[in-house]
Image 1: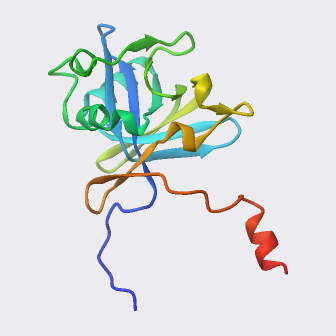
Image 2: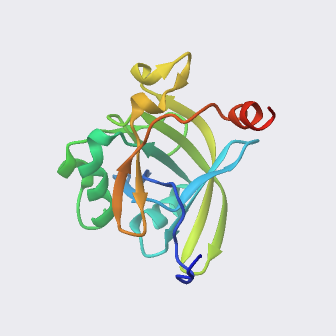
Length: 190
């Protein structure tokens, strides 16, 4: 039997996105955001939802660009730090020792040490209650070569991690369960 727990922001998996932006003075900033995901195939787009009170919200509005940086498990402490400290008050890159790299394609930095980067130009902004949903067209995806298999990023090598909004915890990626668009065909069509 199912029990109602009310309207809550719970969905699995919830990504850990580190959003890279520049402020008005050109200072790099990074923020952890869990409310986001792919929102269109053609053109390729990703959407993130941020509160107006965040420093990153103003940065995206001003520069009309952002990066989505996917950290590996090796950077869980730095990623968590990006989520509870404001760039208004502290240089997060200096504190964490991570390296901001100026994108050549959009007016936003990406994080050198993170394995997977989406460079995005803002194409849409929608106000949704407490949050603004920013949709960025993915101009390019950058991946460290050591994380590529047959030209594609390999999730088992990248080792991204997930956020659990129920218990405010992080989890790693589990084992491969099967091939998409195939396992259902083979298992259920017999």
